[in-house]
Length: 359
Image 1 (tube, rainbow, N blue to C red):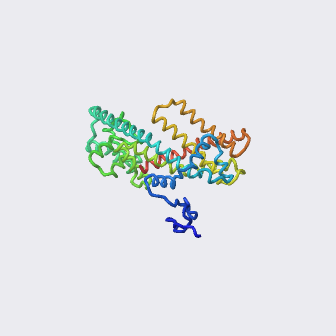
Image 2 (image 1 turned 45 degrees about the vertical axis):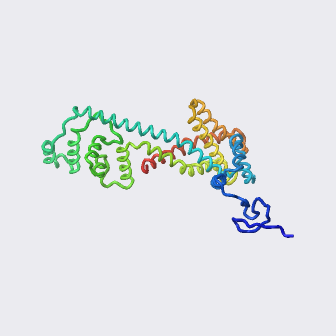
Image 3 (image 1 turned 90 degrees about the horizontal axis):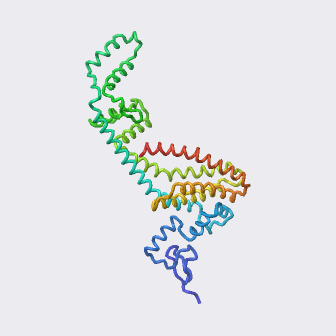
């Protein structure tokens, strides 16, 4: 007697009634769409937030190098895939960190606006002490001897123009007024107040007429920063660029491992280790920033936790590569020093430039 069959709604193939899952595609045979099912499927599909995560989390935190070693041994369905774990934990980390970054950005904007107001007040109070500007007749009288004896003094037309410019600005410049990026903020503020064209303001800031694209871009962002005091926007752009930078930093860390352990497997093996180690780092950062949002943790505890990440790396390298503890300590110290002193500072400089140019 043939057993009754049902048709799978997903792959449209028949199977015996009574099965909880389709034997062909794995979808549940009776999967009523509810709010719970909808959100579980979303999280499970994009972040693999299932039993494998909980099976992987405790070993990740307390057994350095264990997950990477088991993954290379072939246990790739028992634990969460290294790239999936890295993605899921990094999303959590940057979500928690975003609250702290928002606070820093707001404080930076407030401080910059306060500094700008104080600067304007000082400028107003010192206005009586500023020397009157030289009029055009007086400037022409002073330049006349130079023009008449230009050949004798060996002066070029550019020198005459420079002297003219200096005379026009020196009388009105306040020598005690602070400058930023080597340009006279007072002159720029005056041009902005009369709605001068940007190219005139750029020239007052020191940009040459034949400046290239990046120079013009730099001065454009510099003027934007001067107008808005947008330190907070730069900080937010810097923060938003970090996840992109990590996709370059993580492979570079794996490359360092390949260099120091060149006879310990393919580059992909070192990349697996890097995914799990960076997942651990992001989890530690999530805990630190999460706890500090609730109550202020003493700084010495934060530094102690940060130091524990190096100890974790040493133990993970020892367990994963199986070398003597002395060589492992030497390599872990050298890798950490190289990464912190060379790779990360270079990345920070690049991100700061990117953040300023594109905020």
